[in-house]
Length: 195
Image (cartoon, rainbow, N blue to C red; front, side, top):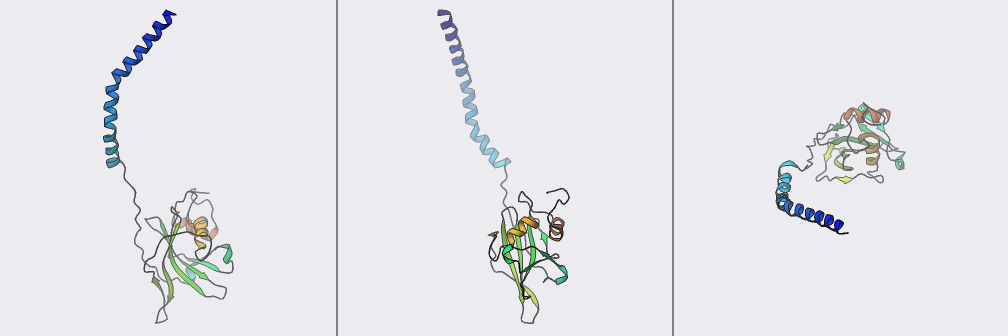
C-alpha cells in the first residue's frame, strides 16, 4: 500500500510543480489577451456598412420594352409588366426597375422601384403620371423608405419578383441577364449559378 501512496504522492507533486512553473507564463498570455483582442478589432476586422448608390430616374416606359411577368395570385386580372430598358442591377446590389400594373380596363399604374435581395426590402423611388402638358413623366417620392417585401396588398408583387426573378436561394441578387432570362422564360439554371 505504501508503494502506491509514494507513486501517487510523486505524481501529485509533479502536477503541482508543473502548474506552479507554468502559471507565470499563463498569466503573461492572459494579460496580453485583451491587447491582442483590441488590436485584432482595430486592424484586422472591417465592419461592412452598406451604402445605397445614386438613383437616377429612367425614361418613361414604352410598350415595346415591356415584359409581362407573373404578379401576385390575388391580382390575376391585372397585368404586371417590367420595362426591360430600365432594369438595372447596381453596384449596391439593388435591382432597380420600372413596373407597369395594368388593370383589366387598361388603366396603368407606373412606378420605379428598387429591391434588395439580401434584406428582403423594396423601395418606391417614383410614380408615373401625366404632367400639365399631357406628357407622361415620373414624379420622385420626397422621402422614399425601404420597406419589407410583402405577399399581400399593393406591394404584393415584391415577394413574387424576389422569388421568381431577382434573387437566388441564398438571398443574393442575380445578374441583369439572368433576371431578364427569368422574366422571359421562367426561372431556371442560368450559367450554372443556381437551380
